[in-house]
Every structure is written in structure tokens, then in C-alpha cells.
Length: 39
Image 1 (cartoon, helix red, strand yellow):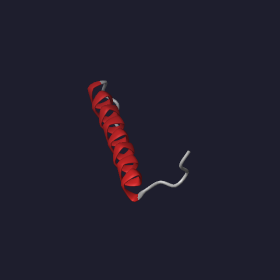
Image 2: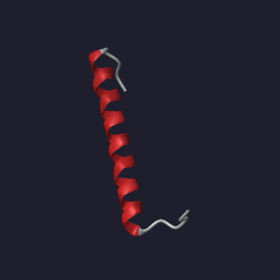
Image 3: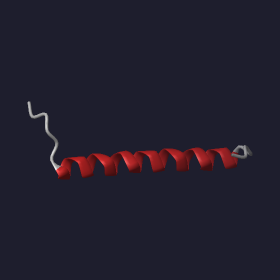
């Protein structure tokens, strides 16, 4: 197995992680505003 990550792989991983975090926080904010909770 290859242990070293290429720069492209790192960028891809970071991009997907960032997208996941953004989507999760967006969903949290939206559902919170719908249920009347203020952050």
C-alpha cells in the first residue's frame, strides 16, 4: 500500500472535507432557524 499522498489527493480530500463541513453547518443553521433556535 502506498502511504504517501500526492498533492492532488490531498487537495481532493481537503475539498471534500470542506464541502462536508459547509453542508453540515448550513443544514444545522437552516434547521435551527426553522425551529426558532438562535445561534
